[in-house]
Amino acid sequence: MLVRDAMSTVILTVGPAHTLREAAALMSARRVGAAVVHDPDGDGIGILTERDILDSVGLGQDPDSEHTRAHTTTDIVFAGPTWTLREAARAMAHGGFRHLVVLDRGEVTGIVSVRDIIRCWAPASEPAPVP
Image (cartoon, rainbow, N blue to C red; front, top):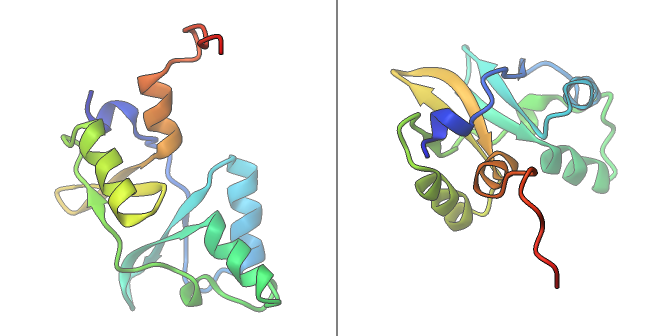
């Protein structure tokens, strides 16, 4: 199975000036664990994850005054839509992250998460093994 078969194509995009609270509210409303941060005047495409927000709050930073630009990961690994799920899982395991932004011809076309991969490898319709 390929990344394009598993990825989410409805992508939450935020700007670098959004506060962490705004980003968290949007992520919560969409029930997603990551947002693409698009900064055409800065680093281009980055990713903000629930972990980034959690780390900031854990440090005592104010989510109403902290902006996504300060917490965005910009040196991200991009997946291609024709990557296999095994390749995506390997990249996630090697890099220690749970989301990959999917690029096709330089355009963001989706995000694939560990949850997406698990859903494909072990569909909920299959019975769980009995311990």
